[in-house]
Length: 159
Image (tube, rainbow, N blue to C red):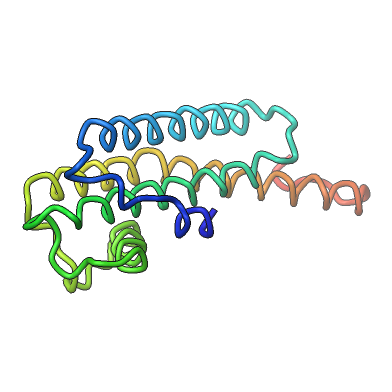
């Protein structure tokens, strides 16, 4: 996925193709959000799918790369982002934003860049937090199932 991010022709997006850029950005986020919600539903309903943990992790990584691509495209519009000029800068800014670290070396100054940052913050709080919660639940349930199979003599706590 990261290789794809660095190889995609993102230079064609941005201020020269605003309709295409926004359509691809919103379509990608919507698709990823729907897929994340399906995985969360499956985890909450305890539907047996051993791949759900991997799928959730991949979807979380894809959403980070979509935001990084959006920031990279926005950086081509003067006055939107200061300090962001490469794909590595865009990925760095996205991860700093997701982690809520905020070093301040890259800043969204333009209204469009701030709008994308707001969308990322909200998206991260809603979808990535829910996905991380579902992923940790899936890992815990898988570990408990494995322990029960390996040590059937152990009884569950609290019961």
